[in-house]
Image: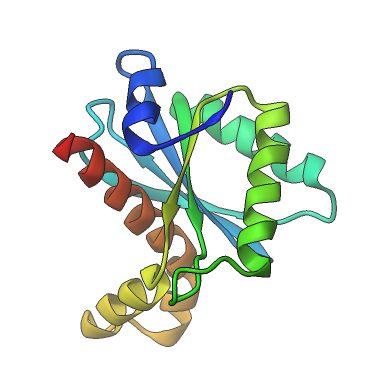
Length: 155
């Protein structure tokens, strides 16, 4: 499957299919899932990255099956000036490898400030530092996915 824009992603999905949002980090992959109507994103957990991509792909395949996902939204860590650095290249390569193993449509979503926004909201909610550390990756994935869902809803 090719990499699509959000509207192309929606068009490529089977009716009722959900989207799996991914916040791909160095140590973990935060995950969120949409509802079947593509309106609401909900955090679903994290995957601890393995030493081999094959381990990450197997864990993501299990998540796709468990949540009945029909496509991916992958957060792209664009620099504040809009340029793409080494982290973007790494995430793009991860996505290309993922598409080589799991044949589902995929779109990238600019994740600038997603972790900052999520962390700020958690601080405002008086969440402890330890709890924030546990939840930030999956919450960032939900933030990324929700941004894409909101774009899809605007048409």
